[in-house]
Length: 117
Image 1 (cartoon, one colour):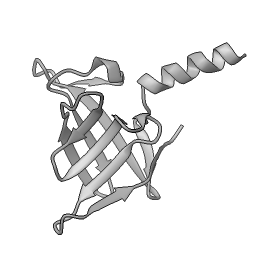
Image 2: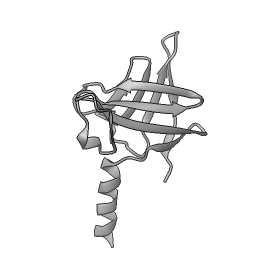
Image 3: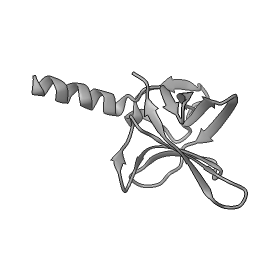
Image 4: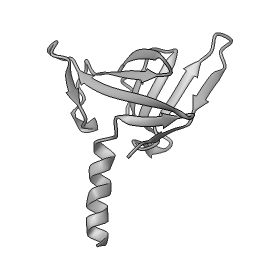
């Protein structure tokens, strides 16, 4: 039984949910690859190309964030908004990704997000 649980956990780690609860509101995240201009949807975090981006639909907003190229991270950002599945400090956080917003005064507003299964 423990081996089965481990296999399921590994599968979920690399194919994150596309639906989240972020501070009480539903958020939908769609990752698309765009290396060849095909805008193909991908659900595999190991299959991201250099043109990848995520579209977040949340609180009547639609935010498109390009992938950033920080070593050891799976992060999308436009320097104002940040969506992260992995960072150097916490490792893979696919089920509780980080959503942050940089306010005009320079402060960072963090939102608690959790995958909806």
